[in-house]
Image (tube, rainbow, N blue to C red; front, side, top):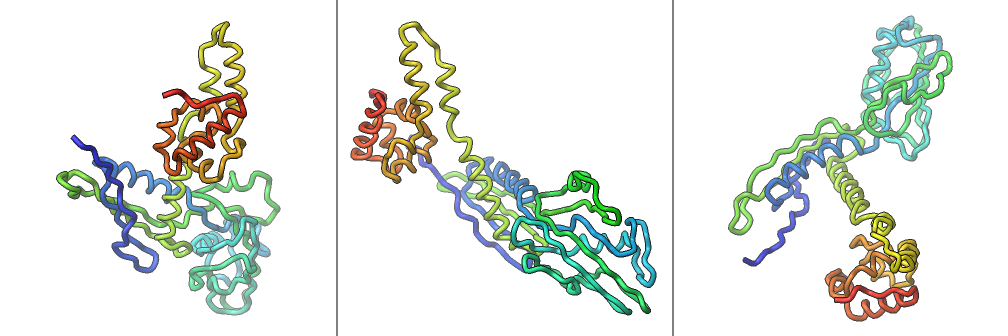
Length: 317
């Protein structure tokens, strides 16, 4: 029976509206829908960076359980409102924003004085209400991070007196759900269609969140392709006759494919296939290498010549 490899489709947009998007990936092998869906859901929730308030300092306020004359909200309520402000931080360095208000009226996120590295995506977010001759002087630290981090972790050193440390939820994702249904591919009806819903807080588009998550997964998986060459060589059995050969193999394991001075195209093809060292390359046959993209007869000649310069040859057929 002839075997055909079926690859999944690229993500397709089902709907996009404001901060929510629904996307589908078709032609997944049976069972791959849940495998891919669950993995992407966990990456979307845990591995996308965001920005949040980590420290707040209010003039005349010693701790979060205090109240401020002329301010309707307690300090605790003000802090909760600040956590609902959605920040975008351009760069990795923490930034400080400030707010100075007097008199009566509503204070919203748009009243903050922002450095050029900070944006606010929901400027109408309520912060507090002032009445009479009340005044409010506030500074907040905005930091970049991943997931949820408690204030004990964020403040490794003791904070200054009057500074209130906060737990931070950095993730820009509000909700992620997925579902899997069967679909027909050729004569089979048990292939999977993955539908994934992503809702963000507005600091990142749902489509970008999905793309970044897929790139993160690919990057992580590519890093673990193949085995550590030095470990496999070191574990090989040693005989008295082959001691010298083992020493030469260990030296070859230290030579990277990139150091063989092959053309960039050939080097890229080998590394993409998980071949990282001269020793690993020498364990391949010419016919096996020709199965790789970009490797032909001329490439085999170039590889053989490069290996010969280090006393190595390709494995015989």
